Image (cartoon, rainbow, N blue to C red; front, side, top):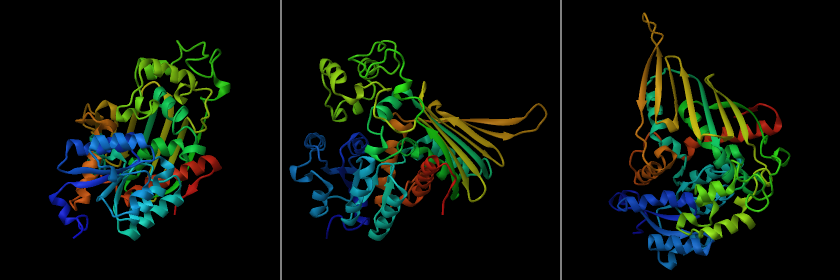
Length: 432
């Protein structure tokens, strides 16, 4: 019998996985196998970069015959694993997942699952036709902060939801590295908008918390700040080459990527696999040809730097989400107002507050502060909890309340695609 033939047998051995696209996110999820080898085992890698294949193979002791230059090469032969961890770039998600499904792999797929509503529907149809499991990497559902809020809602803590308000403040250094200088700075190249690349998490949370079908979406936003005509006097084209204000500029590439050592896994090729240039090479790279050394006001970015989204659900409730880039502090906030109370909090603060009307003498409302035990991994402790749940689902065990199955992830993506249409077309978009 094929060792990958049935899920019952998987309960007695680790679930096996092949990494597709050996980038930072894939390796972050694959790290679960190093912490829990009895539950997950990495048995292969597919990536067009020979150095990434080599370094990944060394990390997981993979034989050369389990290292592939493409998904096509991987799927041309017999299936070598139960699952695939797909961390390719956004515009490749559907194109690389479809052959994996056809070849019999269940897939843990990085968000956003697609770059258009049409691609999303194609993926959903293929997963259903092939009878395969696809889970989307909406890791914030697994962050204890959001999971505990969702549990309180399910318990009826605030009654029926009337309105939700969420905000994501994208820090100036994250905005610069990812959405001005980096991989997601242009719709022309990555085919994702900033809303979908950064905030599909937040839109997913809104849809997940609501539990209702979205019916209408409106949105406004633009590229307001990071344009050539907004450059301060003395700004050059590259921070370490011709800039007169680099020492005082908060967007200095030297400050971010050398002095503070932020975001190295973006800036230095294959840093997530341990390849880090020496200090002199870093300075030379930023001064000469590294895209992360460019001035934030003189890049080829075309994505928005702020956007607001309004949503109406079929039960009459509403929600708003605001994304603002270039803020001092990175944070995500949530405020849920129901018929019996409200929940509010900031993810990074490590607690949320439940308030209920309390008209006793001397009282206006009662308040409960709920502390959240956040693990040390990223996304508020959600990354490896996602992988843990994926392993359970593949083994046929009961999924958690957070489970990001493909079908439960469709509404959040649909909101995002509709919001970008609304922003471009200047009209409210109805969802069928």
